[in-house]
Amino acid sequence: MDPWIAQPSLSLDLKVGLPTPAKVVLVEETNNFLAVSRTKDREVEALEAELRRVGDENKRLSEMLRALLANYTELQGQVNDMVVVAAAANRQSSTSEGGSAASPSRKRIRSDSLDTAPHHQQNTRKPSPSPPFAAHDQMECTSAAATAAAAFHHEPGSRVREECKSKVSRRYVHADPSDLSLAVKDGYQWRKYGQKVTKDNPCPRAYFRCSFAPSCPVKKKVQRSADDRTILVATYEGDHNHAQPPRHNGGGSKAATRSTPAATEAARPAPPPLPLQHQHQHQQKQEAATGPSSEVARKNLAEHMAVTLTRDPGFKAALVSALSGRILDLSPPRD
DNA sequence: CGCTTTTGACCCGCGC
DNA sequence: GCGCGGGTCAAAAGCG
Image (tube, helix red, strand yellow):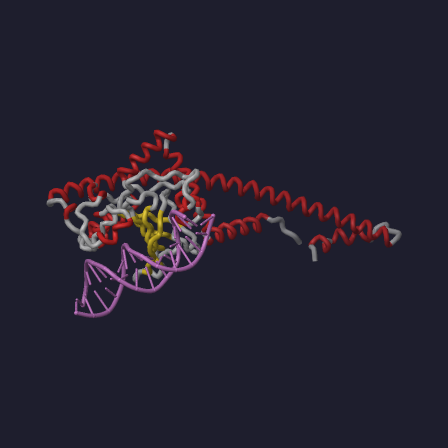
């Protein structure tokens, strides 16, 4: 039963000066209509007020997000600087020890980073004396691999150390747990060549090669984090020996226009996980070509954070709970 | 038709 | 030497 029908004022009006039943019904409906209109007006006003309040809150949250973003960018820069300093220090120490670049990896050294696909089968069992990326300094871990670099310092001889030797960087990407594609958007074209379930993580690990240039030695491993399955951990090995592919291919091969998960990665405007030196070069190129890249980076980051938040069921639930609580508090009491 | 993805098999390093 | 586990290969299937 609607609340306005039970209001005492309505029952009073019904009994005054109404000679015929038809008129009684007419007046009753008119009064009902007026009561409904008044109630609706109050509801509309309340909703408008709530809308204004939410709008203000949205503005405030946007400002907080901007401030957070600025702090993040600043901290990211500091971390980059620290990693550069640490990498320089490690280069000095490693060269003073006789140069670790010539030490062979304990793991099987494959030469497919040098050779093109047709002969890698015959050459894979031979040790590769100096892959192209080995000519660079060995400790070229990116800022994203700060944790790997830290592990390297604590665990000499471990697998992490090997990875750092061959220019390993890591990138953590938030992803929908229901999305099983294991696609990490980084601006490059990747071809998946294997998938494996590892011992320490029930989620499968996917192996990718750079498919933009056949001789590109870069490999990528993508696996969901065992702790938080909404996070994809992308591990990059090696360094691209080519420029970043264009965002969209106009009249390229058919495969380039396909909408496969790996192909769609290349169409997204996300910054590539370049090592530090290349990141700086890339940034300078971008700045020269398109103006300051910090704006673009901030925009991308803001979009990413917004997407991440809106995809998070917990965030949605919290938002709904907060809004419903406010609405109930602000709603006019009905007797 | 050309490319990518899938997936079982295989290779190889490492620990015991 | 053997088994385990990570990484890779390559044939088949899928896709536009």
